[in-house]
Length: 337
Image (cartoon, rainbow, N blue to C red; front, side):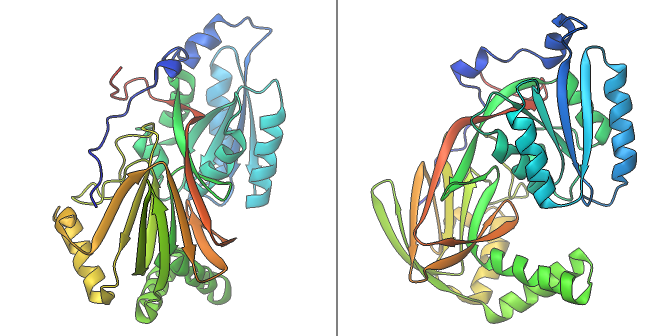
């Protein structure tokens, strides 16, 4: 199987009608009706001082006319979800901003999907995949300026058994690595990156495999595999742009998995990806689809969604929700219209 050609980041005709800049909207509002913005900062995101970030953001929005921004510092995942839920249900709030890594953005976005609220992103995490794919500035002031001057576009989200993901979901190796990493951090107090390295070595030593039956586009596949990866739109799986997306609104999922090729076979595939030869491999399958059903012999599975691991019941039902999320992106993002 091979992936369909990558699409360019486009905006659907319906979304074109709402591509007005938020800055212009604010300027046209009367002083009595400012744009209300709820900013939710993850207190543990990245290595920066989030209290200082709160002060900076408050000052930035204060200097902009017609903006009423309120900044909350969330100290747990549950608090992030609760603050996002409150903002999503508040009729007066127009923009809800997630300040943190991809997990924080996912938590806030999940509460906004299908509503008329617009998501703003302050990429304060380590990897910030979602922000990078939207070309959102990675510095605090640049990202805040994007919220003021950017434009609203609609992007797709994926879901698995009702759980939203904005980037990707996976089974097998990655959820196992996350579980072992968390044990290293909680029980032994090790730093994140050292814990990740140790967990990766431990999981590769065990190299867990599982049998899956996948149904997509009227086709059925049976595999014994170390991992299954499902992306929200197409991921680059070769060259040095590995893991990047050029499109967030093509309305499909990208499915990737390998055959049972052993540890060193998986290493060889990784090397092939770096040198742009992954598509030539017969041990790697890739497919673009709108819906995937995954069944295993296990009744309960660890499933990763945007870096967070939860236990779900088999079968797993993956689907794409086209244009379900409104998000502020830079005006200069290259789009075909």
